[in-house]
Length: 160
Image (tube, rainbow, N blue to C red; front, top):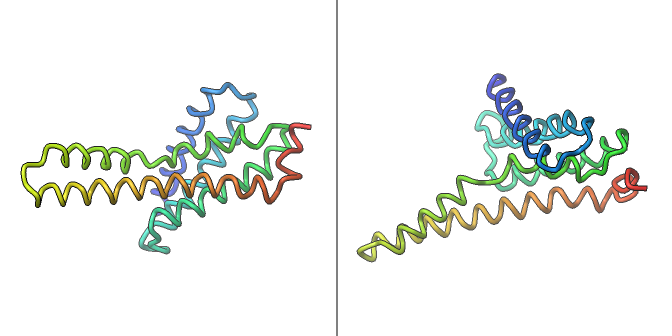
């Protein structure tokens, strides 16, 4: 399991660096984005694993985004970087793309279903995946914003 955690951390760090490169932050922000994303995504992976907690993806995402937000707020002032510079690229690897894809696939199956049984099953798939995707996104935003408000004095030190 340790190698799976390291692999998850590595891929999320690479994705965070790629997302950070879009906004062209200072060069000191890239390692921070990678470390914060790796820590958050690994926490979500650990919480979701059956060996540890077996938690559903929604509360695990909330805990991971709280960690990402807290780390971004606490670490970035030391490098004179706004917390948002590392916060948002570190969150992006946790976007629930598979749930969004399955939601739209379920919707398409609803539209092209020939009978009520197929429609009902497809609509269930659409509803479940759409609600899961929405709840994950809501937890990501909530978990990232809470540390910004709770640690307001620290969070806005870099912009002064």
